[in-house]
Amino acid sequence: MNLAAHNARADFDVVSAWVPQGARVLDLGCGDGALLARLIRERNCRGYGVEIDSRAVLSAMQNGINVIQSNIEGGLAFFRNRSFDVVVLSQTLQATRHTEALIKDVLAIGKSAIVTIPNFAHWQVRWQLGVGGRMPVSKRMPYQWYDTPNVHFSSILDFDSFCGEKEITIERKIVLAGGHEVKFLPNLRGETAVFQIRA
Image (cartoon, rainbow, N blue to C red; front, side, top):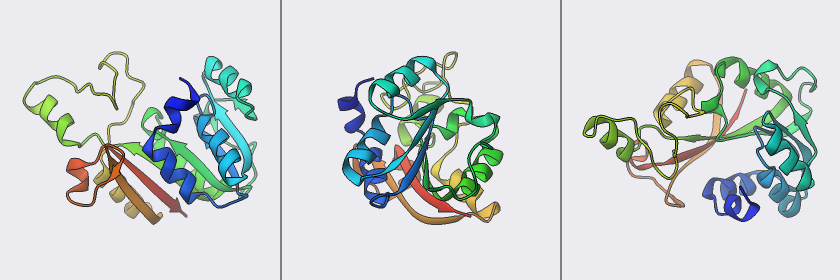
């Protein structure tokens, strides 16, 4: 995936706007490092990416990113508590198995976290499953049921409830569809949600 394709992602625009100038950032599941490269370029940030896929790690390195190859679910003990201003999980959380433990670690090492999730309750997903009877495939979720990296299928309301149950503060949230903010029926119409959370 090239940097130009990444830069077209509306959630990257939101993350970039929310990260303070000069912040120390940790991007978990950073892929080829496009988001972190943008934060370094536009927000004068410093930080690291963590990625498990060796090809993506190589791409991130070629893009000038300080990247560590590691499984983020193996623990983040090599980072000190509060060592980052912002920890980013952009389209990463749904591919992890131990969500609660990961979020706990993230909120320990970061002063806040920005989490971007796909909304599996979007009306097209509901339509494909409810009427078509098949697991949904779309531009935002291009995988078949048998090769998807997604482990958890949550909605915007699910993540809201999770934060409430775990006493996690949602500092701000925006729901996006087609690159624009969705305010009316966001859990039905939104494709992606971006949350900024803290312990």
